[in-house]
Length: 398
Image 1 (cartoon, rainbow, N blue to C red):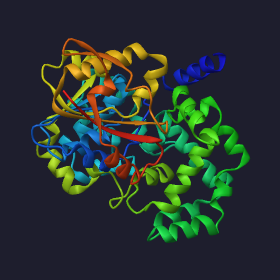
Image 2 (image 1 turned 90 degrees about the horizontal axis):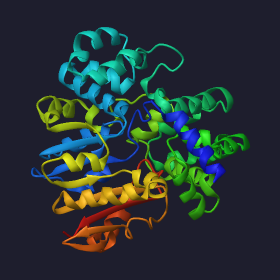
Image 3 (image 1 turned 90 degrees about the vertical axis):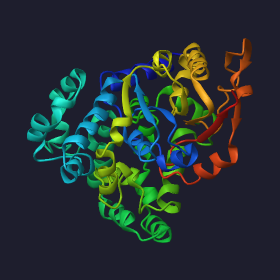
């Protein structure tokens, strides 16, 4: 119990009042395959950095509702929307592709600020330096609490392990065979995972900077041989040796601080930028609220839910809130609704037993879900991020 309290305090210390995620760490290519979005769909997604909410718009659903309890995450998505509406493509890519612009102050004051909410204005008035290219952490993708850890990783690569050329060779490899050869022949496993790094990876403060709270760590430690450190080592080795890095923009930005035009999220590609600018962004709403809070006040129904991994966070510490969230999901679900979520654990056992009311009867959530296990497994094996233990696709039988 003492260790859990210390871990919780570490997580709060790192994230309280901060922008946590500067980019999304869920592969939207999987989501879009699983969601099969159509023109009548109303989508709820937890905002995070907003990248995936913009990706879903490209499939032209009726509406995407981005919901996050952290106003800083929503301020980031607001900034992206303002940039899409008010900048040309190259200026937009400077900010969110390269991660900085020498013209940031002018762009912000003359083009972006007026379209932001008062809350977002206050945040970016104070944190505009994130995009100015100044200081040691010149890229926006080295800002925020998870970005700070990415900067530490890059400092380690450059100054301690001195393997920058090897990392660049990996990212430039033509195929998986070449990637694996580089990784093995240059002993990158040993150079990356020294005893010191493994020690740091076990520290609560380190995991907090990665956005991993104690409940997620506990799940991995309990179900994965070697615990969280071996889980991370194995997952990253798989990325470098078995998954193509040619379009793996998640790890490119993490290891370099920037995207390029050929390896970036879909919303950062020129043709998609123009589609978003032409009107698709008007189908996006931003809501600072809990999932339950949003659903209780939303007048319509939702047909697609993307819940990320936040149930990992709630299951241990706030089971009653998780129960009421599922009740709200059921109450606002449209016919043939589909729900996606991820977990750090290899197998989730806390969703199905949740008690809800349906048709005047007490039911377990698991009785009302039809899992698409084969599709989820097939897609999970294609995940470019590869840091989650499991991926779930379930249809509501209501």
